[in-house]
Image 1 (cartoon, rainbow, N blue to C red):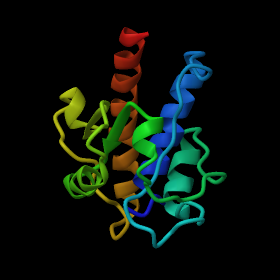
Image 2: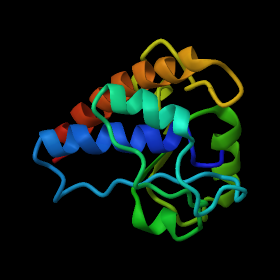
Image 3: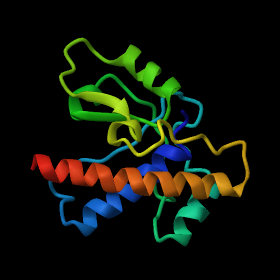
Length: 147
């Protein structure tokens, strides 16, 4: 929602997968929140620390809010949960011909949503990383099949 936990984690993980696959010149990756209360702020320290333990770097990212132009820049927009998906559906222009879906549900990974760890304990950030890594691998395979 605020682009300081789940979505920057997903951006960082997927960016590393894409770089390792040497596809970073062909794929544009970004994350954004549906809310505006953290715009310009760095990600929360808890996901930064959890991600760093697995070799991902989030600290350079800054929160931003989804804008209508994002639907022109991207052909695939993925939400972390149902609430964000609904918010994105209300922003989606009628001429958007890309895809809008839940990140995990799209790839039938046994989960629909990446739970928000913000108000939970440290294990929640590890769970987010587990889910995001699975989703990022599936997303990369999906994109490879389209290139």
